Amino acid sequence: RQTSYHGTVPETDREVPEHWFNDKKFVDAMIDSLSENGVLATQVGTAPTILDPRADLSVFRHRERFINSLEANPKIKSIFIYEEAHCGFYEPKAFLVACRDVTCRRHWYAETDEIDYAIYDRIGGLKDGKPSLVHYDGATQRSFQAPPRAWETVYCRREPEPFECAYRGLDKNAELFEFDPENEEESSFEIRMSKNKETGEDEVGVYAKVDMPEGSYLMPTHLAASFEVSDDSMENVHANTQIEGVDKATVIEDFIDFIDTHGHPSIQEGSGKNYVEVGGSFMMRISEDPEEANVRRWIPSHPDGGRPKFSPVYDRHRHSFDVFLVASRDIKAGEEVVKPVGLWDI
Image 1 (cartoon, rainbow, N blue to C red):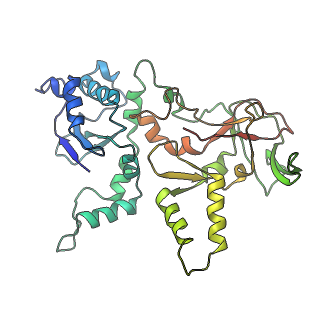
Image 2 (cartoon, rainbow, N blue to C red):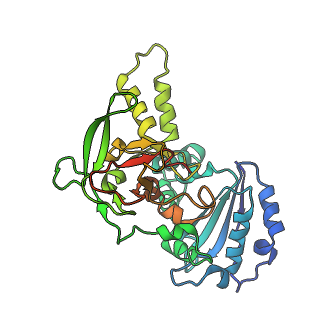
Image 3 (tube, one colour):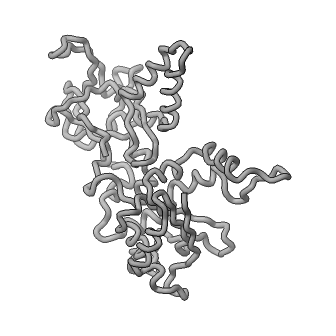
């Protein structure tokens, strides 16, 4: 993986060559110089605050134009922002990482222990046993994965406002309907058995016990408890079932089947993350008839398809975007709650 690092400060009160940030040809040339999975890392000035104006009208307009150039380049697949307070300045400095391969997200969103092991494996330790890096480890990388709120605030001051900015927080006016299998009176849902009209087999269905308005959150507590499993973990589990001379463990095969049936990949393409529903929501029937379905994910598909290359909103709320479901229309008491096919398709 090739990495290009630049240490400029794109604030208009500094002596910065104009072409470094505003010349599209220069930016494109830097990107073209990278390998297919190359990474561009650069300092991009002082970190913003929630009081900053729209970026393209502020002292950081060079930075905004630079980010816009990266967003417009088809070879750039993902862009990340993070802040570092150990640079020797009075204020934290911001850094940008741009990747030519979307699987860069898999490394950026890696777990703490993965990063710690990678540091140990690739850099090694010191003879005195102290850490090789003073200000960076897996926990630090974890903090970089969600940009500070100021980046989200300034990003959402763009005009027109980016689509995902309408989903920066849960709708406080929307109702929440929970499934409580231990308290039927308090539960808003009930489980019923019925016969499949085509196969004649028994099947489970989830039914509403009360009226649920469009936009209401369905089983949010259960969905928030969805467990996360990486592509690497799934490959390892599958590989264990293929080892010759070892009896197959039914429990492992059942576990794999459950994940394949009730899990879905993250909408953060390239992250290598999957989420598996383990609460009452996994019992909702799936229908190919869009008229029958009455459930959708909380954040709809982006109008441009996929997620933007650069979006502090997606980075800050990626778990919520990957698990929460809402009613796609009014659901009447006694009506079955049904998911559509392709619910989590990007």
